Amino acid sequence: MIWSWFVLSLVGCQHLPSWPSEDEPDPKSNHTAPDGTATSNDDLPSVGCGPGVAAYADGVSYETGQAAMDRLDNFDNATTISFCPGIHEVEADVILWNDVILESVTGDRENTVLTGAGQHRILRAMGTGIHVTVRDLTLQDTRDTALEVVMVNSLRVENCIFRDNRTMSSGAAIAAEHLEDAPDTQPIQILDSIFERNIADDNGGALMLDGMDPQRVLISGSEFIDNEAVNHGGGAIGADPPLGTDIQIVGCNFAGNVTDGNGGAIEASYEGSLTVQDCTFTDNESREQDGGAIYLRTFFGPTGIADISTSTFHRNGSGYAVSGAVAARDWTVFFTDVDFGEGLDTNFPRDVSDCAADLPANVTLTYDPGSPSPCQQ
Image 1 (cartoon, rainbow, N blue to C red):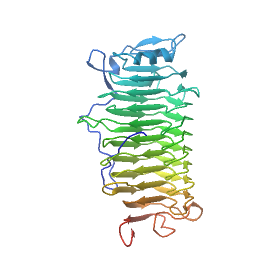
Image 2: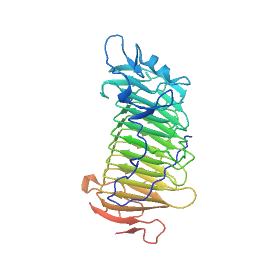
Image 3: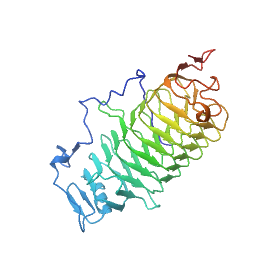
Image 4: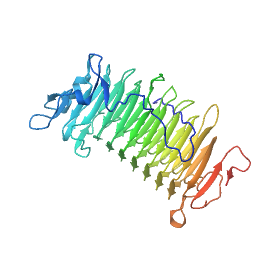
């Protein structure tokens, strides 16, 4: 399975993520040229799209997107692949030696599409000390994980759409595994992106985070709509990392995600911390298990700590008839100003494990499964 651990530090209920710091390199604007010098996109030749030009690799034009992607498969791999508007069937399974950016020439994510044509993945990349950035693109219709990164230093996905991808494994849109535990390791960042109708037969319908080393993860301003994890958990997001991972989910929307396992939207199985802030969870479902929206559990070691604030849970459901919104096993969960809905918007069969069936619309409470009175308002 994909290995990935989330080291979530407990932050105040109203605290936004404070990392990455300003002195960390930004893979969006900087990368390493083949000669080892640091460059930025401003140093590359200006590019334009027209007849006979489908994509660029470090400013050199190619007639097909695949020809540009092929530039990744060598010891001096290209560092920036820029695609013109259109539909490009591409595939690459490579070891990277330099940082890589995949992007749209025009910034038009709706009309700059990379596809697996229902046959294959788009990119699987391995490489130590490497920063991978994907921005302003649609990645769709794959029959393996659309974007898989292994042992890289960081992953940044910004302003992208992942749609109609399917895998027999975990994480149909993105799978991140074995990211480096190095002093300069940056967080996984998923920013301002849309994940729609992605299906994984295992964990994490859209996104799977797994690994042997603690990680930091920021998911911000993104939408997860109608994704599915068929056999296991996490209809939208599956997280199965080691002790000491930090996951922060801020300003995201989860709607219509489903699984036969635990966690209709999110399943997190690790000993660490999780922050959920300013998010909405609507009509997510664990069809046969627990946690219609979120399921939290640990296997070994200390308990997890979750901070859920200023978020909304409406009409989420659990077929296991326990927790329609949030189920936690060996996690302490702090809820601050959370709306669990009323009337037709209530969660089925109850909002939170071991709490009253219907919690107030805007509630602040602490859930401690180890306490004789686990729900303390």
